[in-house]
Image 1 (spheres, each protein chain N blue to C red):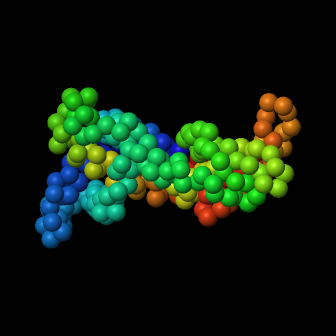
Image 2 (spheres, one colour):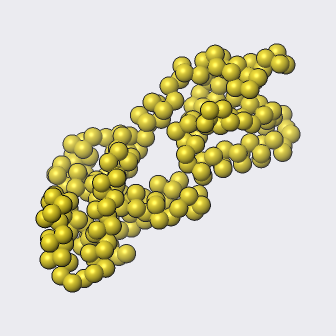
Length: 158
Length: 69
C-alpha cells in the first residue's frame, strides 16, 4: 500500500467508524465510488476495529507490571527450586534468587512471565537462549541446570 | 518484535500514526499529552490511534506467528 492510498483508506475509515452499522454500508458504497479494492480495504479495517478494543490499549510497562506482580512467586516451588526473592526484571523476563532444595544451594531462576507465553516467538527465543547457554562452559557464562514449564510460566535455573 | 515490524511498516505509510502508537503504548503518554507533543488536536490523536490500532492488529494477523521474529 502507498502512503497516499493509506490516507484515502484512513479518511473513509474515520468517517465510517462514526456511523452505526446500518448507515455504514451505504456510506461506504458512496464514498468508495465503485473502487472495490478500496472498499474491501476499509471494510477489513472496520472489522478489526470491533476486536481491537483492548489491544495495546494500556501502556506496555503497566501491562508487564500487572501481569507479573513481584510478590506472587515468593515461596513458590518450581521443580525442586524454591523462589526466594526477585533480583531483577527486564523486557525478557524476571530473574529470581532461589534455593535448590535437593542440592541445598542457591540458584538463579529466570522466568518468562505468563503474559509472554502466548507469543510463540518469545517462547522460542527463551528456549534458544537456554540451549545456547547450556552448550557453553565458561566462568563468566552462567551454567544452565534446568529448563522447565510451570503453569504456563517458562523457567530456566542456573 | 512482531509489533515492532508492524510499526515500522506503519511508519512508512503514516509517520504520525506510528509516533502516536509509540508514545501511547511504549511511552505511556495520555492522548492529551500526545496531542501537545505532536502539536495536533486531541481528536486527531484519537482518530489516528483508532485507525492505527486496527491496522496493526490486521497486520499482525496477516504476518502469522511463524514470521514474527
